[in-house]
Image (cartoon, rainbow, N blue to C red; front, side, top):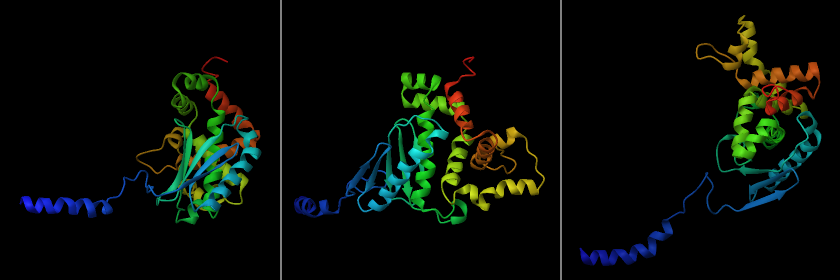
Length: 256
């Protein structure tokens, strides 16, 4: 037994380390090489080999920062955008605490659901609107909470004052407004509300807003797009900018 241990130990030191891999975080192997592109609006961080997609996203964001800012506010703060190409998820997000965004670059298989825009364009148009929202909702009480508690303080105040249907409805409106596609141009996107109308379902506002465990209710993306579109058409392109900045500042709550 002792002899076999003496033989096994040097054997394991020579051959086993070649079979050991380092721990992986976030689906990214340690061998992945990262690059970045810096502009006044964003720092795009991406794996080596997808330079063309990164440059396209930078171009779209730079264009949007100069053309759509006036409809949500004049504040602009640089954001880090990380491009992930090692997952099978079709999604993206923008969040505070820390202020960052991640794009998951595997496109959706259902082109009827999200349209035929190139996936990188779709993500850049939709998610950068969320960046503009957070940049301009740092005001009033929201700004005070940010000073006291950091970015998570602003996130708490923004979520308390501004409904999720606006965040997503405004971003979907942006998709539709600045491109030749976007969900607002797709019949598939309106099927949930069309099904309610055809079935003569006249739900209350609170049910449409909060959903139901009993009945089918369209989600906040569809609801938000309809409301944002109505506000822009009825009262002008800067209507929601004024409404949401007042809400983020808690002006009514403060008695102003």
